[in-house]
Length: 295
Image (tube, rainbow, N blue to C red; front, top):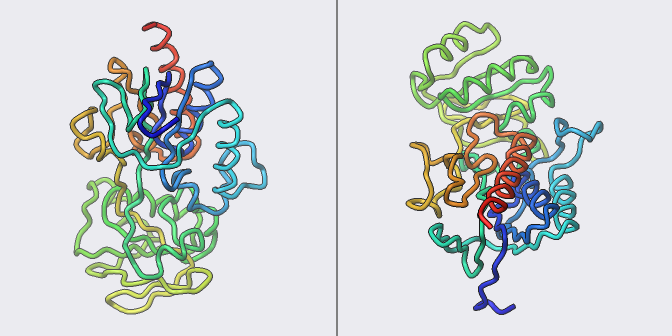
């Protein structure tokens, strides 16, 4: 097939994290000709994760990239075709993605953590730097942890981490939180949590693991740093074509157009691999039903 050919598929899946790959397994098993446009860097956030202990079926845990490789291998075995490139152009009105055409599209582009952009930050992701307490808090039992942020997400991360960490410090660049009052009250009355106001983290310290952070008010020793400054849904390419909420997340109910939404691209509440996979299953079953009803 040349680049000028327009291949026609039953389903095109945009995205290759747990939502996209699970959707592909289901659509391909239903004998729907399926293409997954996986991205230049495929696999989603789990490709940046080390040990995953909360995905069912792996009593000893599994490395994030290994889990994604297994999911992709399963999707390929079922018959999903893959293109490892970023989508350049989407036309929802006629269900085309780049040079490919479909009868239904599953949007599973996910969301990206907002990071601080510090010199040492990316190197230490999975080695003490995290953006997901429910994913990684258990690794910090009886350890010192710093949480960076001031919104509801940071408050939720901090409260969850208090179940594990021996001490917890919230570092916030302003003199008050942006979080809701009820969340602030929970934080301010928790004896395990200390707060450092008017302070910015300048870098994460350590070579092979986190040993501390350098801030505008000096060095803080810690074993873990949780960055909780929000997420950015990967919906920019769909602006003006699919329905988005005020934060840019895709609205789920769009199947009348042949568009199905799966995973963190709409889920700003749970953001887990297992929930993303569940949403991928749901989107695939809905797409299969839609195609059956519209043949």
